[in-house]
Image (cartoon, rainbow, N blue to C red; front, side):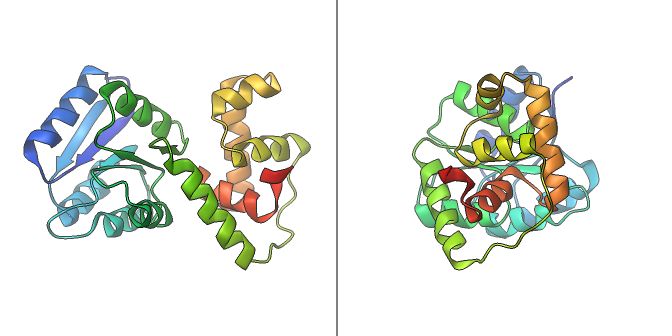
Length: 215
């Protein structure tokens, strides 16, 4: 298997097995599955997956708590929530807990596999209609948080950051700036390192706090 290492966490065995099978057929390396939150955390700490597909409804721990604990691991995976709920509160709590993306289970197989790919590449992925909700929440929080000067970014890093804040994908940014996809990824990673942030969702909030999404 040449794809990213993926772990599936869902308490329904048939659904869990179906997801794992779809991922395997798409050449992802499914390194583990789990049906409970505590079990998932033990396994994730040992196998170090790149991506965790996480349901929010688990029998022992809320999925939000599992996402928060995964984000605190020494080698934190990217978390894609895959759940039945599209409720606003569930989405926002998952993102605040560190989830990279949020997809409802009504998504098609191609939509799901594309979401896993983009999550593995570090892009935030949301069911259509939910991205605007998350950006709106970041704007609301930004109004309550006075910005500081922060580290100095290069002009190109600032340009990429501005487009990230507007919700463009890495491929769209690459086309807009006539850069390679890899170059855009490198700029984003350098910016994350400079700002001591952990994921693109945090980067979006940083940009919104400084009004870059309105420029």
